[in-house]
Amino acid sequence: LAKTTQPISMDSYEGQEVNITCSHNNIATNDYITWYQQFPSQGPRFIIQGYKTKVTNEVASLFIPADRKSSTLSLPRVSLSDTAVYYCLVGAGGSARQLTFGSGTQLTVLP
Amino acid sequence: DAGVIQSPRHEVTEMGQEVTLRCKPISGHDYLFWYRQTMMRGLELLIYFNNNVPIDDSGMPEDRFSAKMPNASFSTLKIQPSEPRDSAVYFCASSWGATGTNSPLHFGNGTRLTVT
Image (cartoon, each protein chain N blue to C red):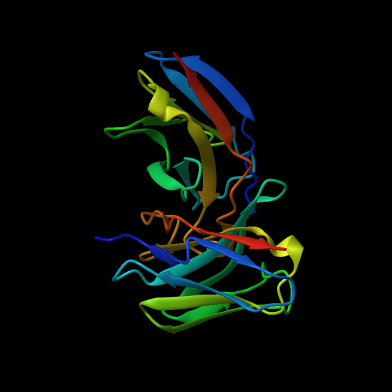
C-alpha cells in the first residue's frame, strides 16, 4: 500500500495561500493522487485529483513533481470556512483496498 | 443528484443489541464502500462492493460485522451483537468505474453510533 504522510496541523490567516504537502514515497506507477476535505459531522468531500505535473480547478491546485513521491495541495486566499481536515489519498484502479486514508491535516484558518 | 444517503444519522444502543446501518449510493455508481472513523484509528475501510458483489472484506473487524448489498441502490452494515468499542462514525461512499483513476469517492454524512 502506498502510505501517505502529511503534517498533523497547520494554521493560516484569512486571505493567505495555504500549501499542504503530502509525502508518498512508494507510490506505484498507476496510482493517482486525490485530496479530500472533511468538515465536522460530514463525510469527506472530493477536492482535486491528479497524476502528474499540475492540476487546477475552481477550488484548488495540485502540484506533483516529476518523481511523484510527494504532492502539494494549494488553496488560494483561504477563508474561515476552509477550516477542515484535508486528506491525501493515493490509490490505483486495480484494487480499491489501496484507498487508505492517512491521518489528514487539520487546517485552521484564523481571522 | 441527492448524493449518498445514510440512515439513521445517529444511533444509540445498548451493548449486545443488533444495529443495522443503511446506505443508498448515488444512482449509476458501481462501487460501494463502508468506512469507519474514530479519533484513534481515523478512517478505516471495512468492506467494498463492486456491482453488488463483496470484493474485499478484510477490513471488517470481526464476525460480529456483516454487510450486504441486495441491489444496486441499497446496502446495509450490521453489527450483532454490538459492543461499546464499536462506537464510531460509519460512512458509506460510492463511486463509478475504476476507483482511483478518474472516479472520486462520494461520501454520505455518516451514522454516528454510540453503544453504551
